Length: 119
Image: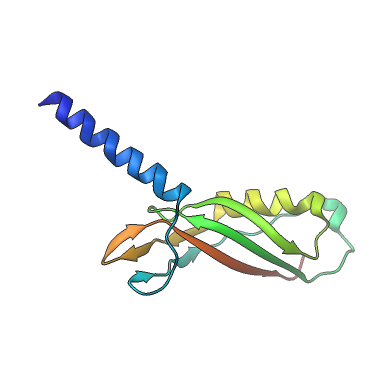
């Protein structure tokens, strides 16, 4: 009985890890996640005086709990040296209502545009 419970727990963890590595595509029965919380993107002080409007295109996986994973900055008018700052902010402050497949939360690949103004 105990071994069975451990195997079930391992299978659940294994399935979760695999779905983040192989997220589903949004569409059909897979409903898109919804952004529920976004934090402020804090850039280094050396950005002061630079253009006030920043555009960022991200790809990321939203996991079954609504956490952003595998965040990659695909394009931005920020210098590349600051892309890691944007990535870290998204990973630590963004939260989503997870995507669903027939009512069950699933991991999905998402492309997200961010426009940052007023820095």
